[in-house]
Amino acid sequence: MQDTVLVVEDEADVVDLLRYNLERADFEVQIAMTGDLGLAMAREKRPDLIVLDLMLPGMNGHEVCRALKGDPNTEIIPIVMLTAKGEPNERVKGLELGADDYVTKPFSPRELVLRVQALLKRHRLVPRTEIVEVAGIYLNKTNFEARLDGKRFNLTTTEFKLLSLMLERRGRTLTRETLLSDVWGYQNAAIDTRTVDTHMRRLREKLGKYSGRLETIRGEGYRFNAVAES
Ligand code: CA
Picture 1 (cartoon, helix red, strand yellow):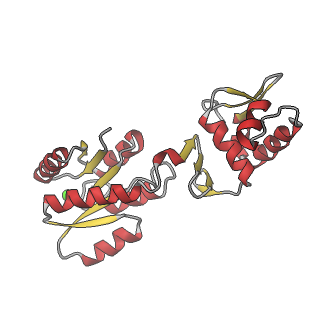
Picture 2 (tube, rainbow, N blue to C red; picture 1 turned 120 degrees about the vertical axis):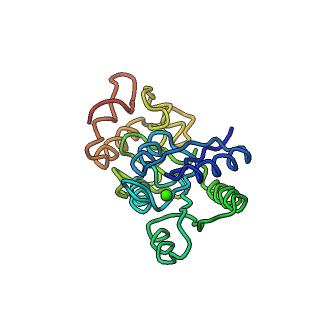
């Protein structure tokens, strides 16, 4: 599958140069010509990487970068900032805001493509499949980081496994036996299934406004409702 690069840049000739070179390197390229549109497209389309110009009409590159890196839904998308020559402070500021790399204009397209490829390669060390996000709940299975509306919260290892399973199979009812087998590794359903109920109760307490999404389906088991209004 092709990787998608979102280019946020208002200068048509730079857009053309980037599009040509990225497509030649087998990327799918999306273009946003304002900062606001770039932010909206990043949130909606979830590109694999963003090339973000600093000087943009409306929201500038720093503001877009800050918004993307401050949102658990988009913070993992790597960003390469583009900035004009002779603005050393801009580089520092961009990196402080969470940009992952930085290229100075005028740039060599070949160098930019290499940077994009290197950044994606580095980024793959945390594969996207290791991130589970539903509603305002974010789980990173690589480092067991859990966030609720962007704020970190603590889960025990078992709670983490239980919640990630419920989120991955959201909308489906999971029996206590299935959960015991898949979360606890018990093959024998004779083990007290109330263990599951106890953990679900604790999990609900930790989920705050999302607790209602973790539904008890009487006589069947549990289901995470991904569409309910919380
Ligand atoms: Ca620009």
